Image (cartoon, rainbow, N blue to C red):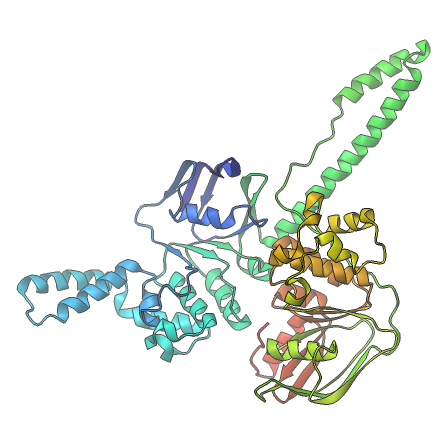
Length: 537
């Protein structure tokens, strides 16, 4: 168990959170949420002792082992995969190495024998004899081959190192596990395995994640860092989100009613306060007015952009026809082959499979690159907007301010219009004069969405649009795409977005494609029913 008593933390004059009193108990998984910069990662660092709170105490039960997901993917390059995983229980690893060193001695003494006996006893108590099989089970569950256990970490791909470090954090049944973005770099199968592992876990788990589907599946509680405080709520992310939105709406509605009542009372008082026959009524209304207060919403670090797409023109009968389309990369490797499909009205299609292949298909359809075979034809009424995964060409070397950058795409060139438009995308005040080349990944993404919104297109093509977004922006984009009346072609790793937006799924395969109507969840069930592996998002 972890107990926080009157914990506060601040950088200089900036208070991230103050007077926090919380308990984290075994058997629960706590999702840590908050806006970018709210202090989620800082909070985890305080819990694991890497940072000291400005005030207050963090108490962890005696003899409790705490494990943390490491973010430095190169820190263990000098070790094998097996050693790296076992380091998740540092005491066990140290015993193992000390044992090996003693047994390797040529002049093995009686004292060495006694020490070895002590180590063997502790080694057995810590589950040392099962450590290799436990490590193997973890890495296989995460999608790695057992044979990689004896390979050096330096030879692994980045995506493989991510899985090994996650296995390290889970190794040896620690009582407390702290995970910062554990699904980054995981495929769908590995994420599903992790969800099952955490759902059955006996200990205390705290996790920071932007993956809404993951938070919904594993969390028993949500810990919200906002308003310079930390509050805990029972339930998963979806329950917290719907509840918080409802409360905000109720407060706003009540404030609106109070404002209307105040105006009504003020008008009556102004009209009749000088009238003797109405003076008593005016006095009673003045007393009532004094009791009415407008409850102000507390200032929040969480900000939701508005992302909504309107069509300037309804699409006609013909949307897009693709016939036997083929594409190879520069080395001659086939990216996709014999791809044929027709987009119908109201189709919102999620593309799954190899992301390089799907991105190449989008580049062909948007005429960024030519196809190596086959044809495609857009309907005469169709206007499309494209959100590329790599938006470098739109911003690199560009000295334009956000305002001037947006002006080139807008029919209305006035600053007042553009200010209002940019305000909905969280660009306000002097921030609109910031040069676009220095924007963060999330800010550039919001600029690209703004650009698409200005076009009024009836078909949207999006290549991994959530990669640089926070939870609030992801939710706003999800709502915008779900409400859009036109067509959508989507590649995304966000399960929730794919499942709630798409009504059709196309999987690109080496030999062609699989095309199924229905949600992504329906597609997953279909793949399982025919005995095929579920394709990763």
